[in-house]
Image (spheres, rainbow, N blue to C red):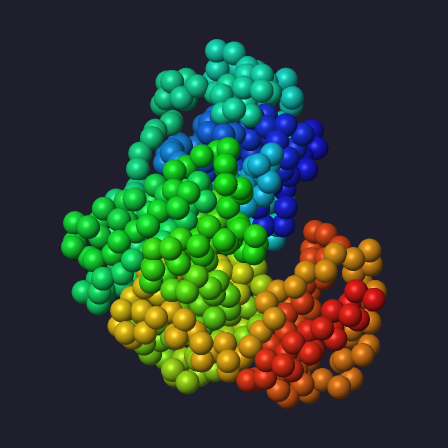
Amino acid sequence: MQISCFKAYDIRGKLLTQLDENVAYRIGRAYAEYLNANDVVVGGDVRHTSAPLKLALSAGLVDGGANVIDLGMTGTEEIYFATKHLGVDGGIEVTASHNPIDYNGMKLVKSESRPISGDTGLFAIKDIAEQYDQDTVESRLSFFSDKRSSDEAFLKGEGSVSTDKLTASGKYSQRSCLPAYVEHMLSYVDLTNFKPLKLVVNAGNGAAGKALDSIEQALKSLKVPIEFIKVHHQPDGDFPNGIPNPLLPESRADTANAVIAHQADMGIAWDGDFDRCFLFDETGEFVEGYYIVGLLAKAFLDKNASSKIIYDPRVYWNTEDIVKTAGGTPIKSKTGHAFIKERMRKEDAVYGGEMSAHHYFRDFAYCDSGMIPWLLVAELICTSAQPLSELVKQRIAAFPSSGEINSLLEDADAALNRVIAKYQPMAEVIDDTDGVGLEFGNWRFNLRKSNTEPVIRLNVESSGDIALMEEKTAELLALIRA
């Protein structure tokens, strides 16, 4: 059987045509056999199919010889945390994050929450999964169920595998790591620093709401004066307010409007599996992830002088300036969670950040979290006695950036070659860490091709000259789209 849902860093596929219970079983069994895993944690986001896919995955894991610990509805970072916290052999989150509603997928890690990507075993798992005999797979799935579900029932969350049958096997159990997870989240800040704050929080009807409620209860019990204004808070696999992806400008209005209406100190919005959070200042203005990287780098260097900070090469002048000024060591890494995490481990970096709102933490098994960043920024607002707009205002003026601009093209290679031919001969610095990075004294740009589609991604920044940044952005886009 050919399986087409394996990507470079994770598993993502269209339901029924690329990903179903049959494929999930195969993945679980292959994962257990490839890692020779004894204990594996699993969880799933709020999509209707996440529960049946997770149980079919669990059936495969059990048949592969692993004990399964099911954490229930989780965000991806809860799987990262539990894998390290429980000392198990690996973890799998069933999630499609911000993909369309007719998709689902999985994110896989091994012990110590080390990522499993195409370079570190993901495609080996795919090869094993494809080799199982179809009749055997169907027979084993039937063992774990009284009857096979229809396609319609599966899409509604009514899968074939029964938890009773899994429990009867003696290798499946359910538990929660939420209390320990919340305790760990709060360890990143000094709660005595907090002054009264009003925060708008938008879970996007995804998995963040449940975790946030537990954090809220812990803060209340500790008498930390934070008030939460909740928007689209209840988990709902139908996503009545749209797929949660605040990286898209059209997905930001509800959070921004709530900040203004409630005169909040900050707005926070998450994607579906909440491994990314996006911040809005007290005026409702969206704050680009690039400038949050700089804020978090300073927050860690204030507490961990002379530490190393990892950043991605798309835009970085602001981050480098902050890190060097604070006495830290800035280190550039290729974009992508697998590369960032690997470099952080190699350098023992305290923090790593990408402009795409992925933030990585050494004490969080070098993994990305969507909860730690807003806690740190909230603490900064309190300790600095400045609103978020002021914390980033000077940095935006010092290093204005275009944000990432995508161009869908018929021939991405031709566009890339046009840009290189014109600009590279004039460049003072040529950086090939990821894509093409060229510097010209007081401005620079990075241009990268997508690995999966005919798209070119452009980022431009300048040193203190917003007009120059805008001029060069328009100039480059005209050439790219010619």
